[in-house]
Image (tube, rainbow, N blue to C red; front, side, top):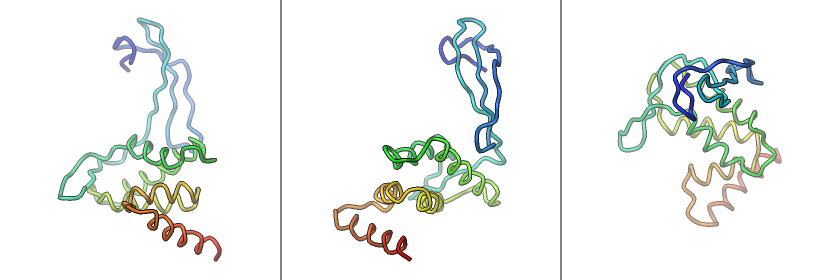
Length: 153
């Protein structure tokens, strides 16, 4: 593994352990040249996924991008990093086992919405505001009303 600090090619694994959800291995490494320490994660990847964006654009699935967008929705909420990682791992697993190597961005958005609905209602509304492209305060009010109606049932 190349050192992110000095780009030396070799590093030594100092510690390995599974992540809390068991979907990855966390490895603590030390560079043999500069002695800097860094962490890597090893995950199972069943297949390469391609995301179908609007206007027939295609791009490779980027797990880190999904983690960032969910983390932004959960910012300053009582949702831990482990919960975000578990949600994203579950979504990625669903997509990889779905059988189709091309997945619509809309499908990913719907899976995130479903996951956030059960995790935190404010994060759910925040993500929806971007995903559904809210343009006015009324859009928030209407959507929040539907969330409250579902929560009361």
